[in-house]
Image: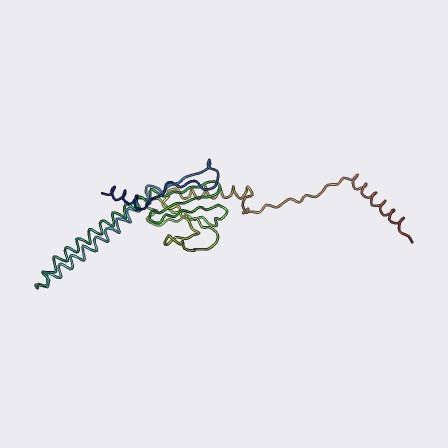
Amino acid sequence: MFNLVRHWCERLFRIPPEPGPPPGDEARTRVFRAAPNFLRYLKLIWGIGTAASVGGVVIFGIATFVAMSFARNGETGKIQPFLIALEVVVLIGIVIARLVKLAVLQLDYENRWYVVTDRSLRIREGVIHVREMTITFANIQNIEVKQGPLQRYFQIADLQVDTAGGGNEPHPTVPGASLHTAFFRGIDNATEVKALIQERLRGLKDSGLGDLDDPRPVASVAPAFDATAVGALREVLAEARALRAATVKP
């Protein structure tokens, strides 16, 4: 049943193919994917949410059934079958919704792409709301590794990349996203990816395609004259003065 739901979601959301590499040297392109533990992390959160939803409906139904049993009147006996049927319908709806959610989580994990070249990076994530960002290294302001307690248990982390301009300007189509922040979510080598981006960022700046972090002093170039040249210049200056004195009338 799960594969059927998953196939239905793929057709419904029309998931795009693998993204092409961003601008840069294709020979140096590195592609990173979310770690397998990221999927386990998502499934754990999904399981907690599913248990809470189903458990809440079951507890509410049991409490209602017990309360109506103590009431002991004819009208209550007529309503009980209707409430039981309603609760079954709600439970079936919750189960279907959670299965769809699980299929979306699986697709979201499989369709995460993190591509890094020598000049830029491209990130694609999402299934329902597909978000693709291309960031040139010249616009990167900050790179930060973020890891919560549960992520630490699964040995994964998020790498946050902030770009210049706009602060936390919200994304126009993706709720909760920013136009100037990108994430490598659920990777198990966040430190390695951060070091790679920083290395290529330094290489790009040192090549003259960006501002240098540590401005290098420019050596002054002064013309060098030997004694012979200086003497010749002095003779020319003396002759010019003599010529000027001869031509000027008293």
